[in-house]
Length: 162
Ligand SMILES: Cc1cc2nc3c(=O)[nH]c(=O)nc-3n(C[C@H](O)[C@H](O)[C@H](O)COP(=O)(O)O)c2cc1C
Image 1 (cartoon, helix red, strand yellow):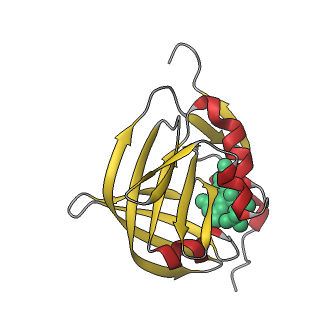
Image 2 (tube, helix red, strand yellow):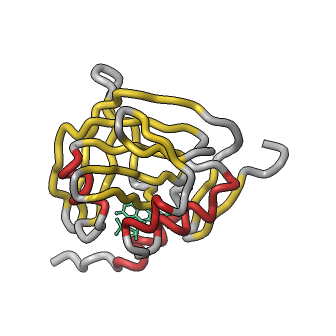
């Protein structure tokens, strides 16, 4: 019988996959909220689809399910504090209240983000202790700056020469 690989090593292995950092925001009849995420990617060009993986306990997931929409806010290097707020378990209502944002297609978009995309929820797929949300992109935009990065469990910025 095969031995089960060590979950800690699993975390370390995938922690070496350097990523950007995003905040997934949403607002519906049950309230507004958001969470910091790096398990996301573009999925399809025709139609335009993106996917985000939500831990099943994430409080943002039921908000997205209820609202039927979400925004991907790709964070800039100077938004580490924003990443910290949305990675926390502050009351959902306090998270967005403390961060400058506007509505795009009725979905909160964080001011100062490096880029953003608003998605209409198309599918929720079970994936172990996570749920994969597939959204169709209905609005997009670019901001200014350089990306906030996540590598080996810490935030980073591109070196000045990049
Ligand atoms: C860099 C980083 C990336 C993260 N990526 C994810 C992710 O992709 N999916 C997820 O469910 N949680 C992710 N988290 C954890 C959530 O941000 C955290 O559990 C948060 O408290 C969820 O907020 P909520 O319960 O208000 O939805 C990440 C945290 C950090 C710091």
